[in-house]
Image (cartoon, rainbow, N blue to C red; front, side, top):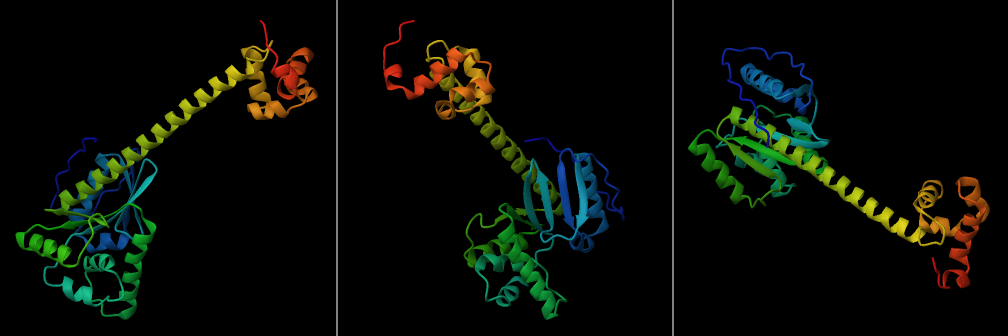
Length: 280
């Protein structure tokens, strides 16, 4: 995994800097309403950290708090920066129609002051979509105190959560949480790229092996050499296609002589020819 550059948080900062990096590390999309709920100094830390590590930052109206795109793979994150030890159970009781998994997700959002039924419905709808839309979803929870950590562990097991559905990542502070988010996204992107490279190598190996078989079959025809075989492969294609091709078609599309075209058509269609012994 890459070594990420650490950024010291400036508690006096009020406005995040303009991020104009090349984005070679990837793209980070932050939910604009989540940004508005955080202290400006923390947004400044996030912006500086991403810029130092060549990530491009965009503020957009998305469902999760963050979406990272690294190596062609999208990874979504919900980032809980304030775990309320005394408020999670009432939250669960408000959503009896959903599974425990979604219930835990709902509990991670602060509904204080959201007495409007439409707002509750929209928040519920937003979290449900996360489960449906993202194959890689992580819930990062900031637990700076022992009390908050115990509360989280207690609620997690009390509600019968399944490990990894979704994946929860407890952290001690917000800065550590965001650095963990970037590392997870980067690691996922690296794995994706390695998987793509492995598939390309496997396909290339298969192609080379297939071409080797093709050459062995076609050059087994009397009078046909590697040049002729390559010409047939480029102009006509597979062994099956060559076997079906007529003499005239071979002459029209390749530089083979009339005798060689005749030999090829006889080889695939005349049992007396392809079953008779060939003496070179």
